[in-house]
Amino acid sequence: MQMEALKLTQDWDKTFPKSDKVDHKKVTFLNRYGITLAADLYTPKAADGKLPAIAVCGPFGAVKEQCSGLYAQTMAERGFLTLAFDPSFTGESGGNVRYMASPDINTEDFMAAVDFLSLHDRVDPDRIGIIGICGWGGMAINTAALDTRVKATVASTMYDMTRVNAKGYFDSEDSEEARYQKRAAMCAQRLEDLKNGEYQLGGGVVDPLPEDAPYFVKDYYDYYKTERGYHPRSLNSNGGWNVIGCESFLNQPILQYSNEIRSAVLVMHGDAAHSCYFGKDAYADMVKDSKYADNKELLLIPGASHTDLYDGGKTNAIPFDKLEQFFAEFLK
Image (cartoon, rainbow, N blue to C red; front, side, top):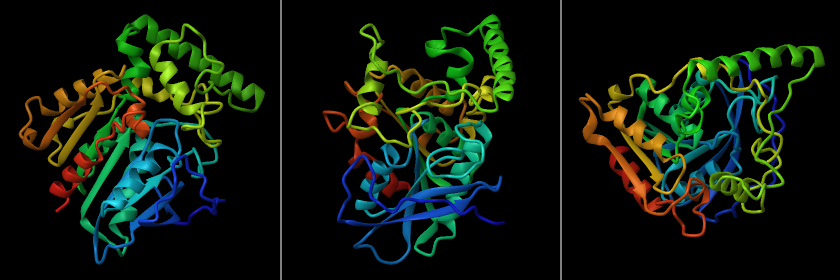
């Protein structure tokens, strides 16, 4: 097992201010596909001994310098050793082909983060949790269904990326014909990419913003395209994923056997978020016919939009007190 030598910036280039309550450093680790992942490790300065730990990732198309780093640093201020990482093929992480996604590889990225934390000399390996934001909320639940080492999971403002790719927003493209057209377009794009010798980007958040853009597109613009959340390595802030980057999501639903998750799961969503149906349905599937429903919770935050749970928005919507309480209870 040999790690790739990544070029990691040592400058503080986050979209949030650095805390004087935690120590920060860059680290790298391997997933089982041999891809080297880059991460920010946050350790509370006042803590002694073995610590409970949390791995954080998301949103889908973001980098660790954005939302996941904010969550990680804030939870480190509250006593947890935390790890915010870039997924395979994105940000500062490795992977020779850039801007690709995979339900399997991205779930493995979370499990590899758990590997790293389990072997860290400051971590209690029996007290590890994960936080997934947006599309990584779905990946976090998928990881919890597979990784028995994960003792507590938070899915924040989650997307089910397989559902939205296969069925469209609000399931508006849930038909055999619509999926066939998507598959045909992807197959044609594969050949164009090979002819051109490069992968065509699908485009990040639309810019300039059309006046008639849906409200959630305006929310994305307000985060990814302004000083609030823009980052030069973020796919969503710039050119986006490859057009064929999410091709396999069309045929591979995640969240299988979620009602067999024995560990604790908190699904939290703004009730004004366009994506709220993903969280509600994921929670319902998780507790349906489950023997382990007692440690599952759906938290709806009044008036919060999808991106309000990225950085708190204008109302500090992220319930960090609740997250601290949840992880303290289930990582003890």
